[in-house]
Image 1: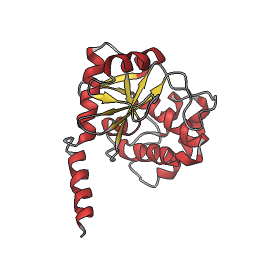
Image 2: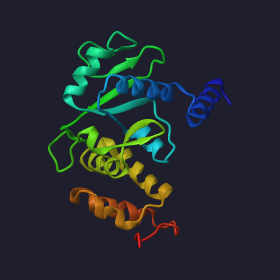
Image 3: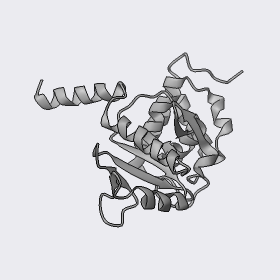
Length: 204
């Protein structure tokens, strides 16, 4: 095997052991946001990991309010974090090199166009796991479904939901707690995963 392949395997192993730069960045930014009292909820790839679906990711996505985003740049820019380019809403951890992407309340997943599912206030959907605030599972699934449904370039979001269904053994009735806009797609993905006989058909 080539050296590059060995390095990739080693980096993946570090990720799953939670000792890699992405996890270091996650813990660091969460601590800083807590210190400054800025509401947040970690989303996307790192939220998948927190909820039990281990897949690697190269950045940290953080849901914040518009006011929270302004406060983050005032508090952190130039203090261990820098924008990747002038005017960017995102930051890069200068110690680890990992990018932190901010998702803003009120905007829309996927194609960015108005739809029944929007990025919510982090305070309303945050669930603390191991000292870090993450988007809770139902909202994470809603956002990923809405994203994959509206943007052909985001089909991996639908695959992520199907893997969550498999890994967490989510029931078909889990859809009842989701926004109506995404329920049919959840059911479609659930049926696609239902060849795994361990999946429950309902929560009774």
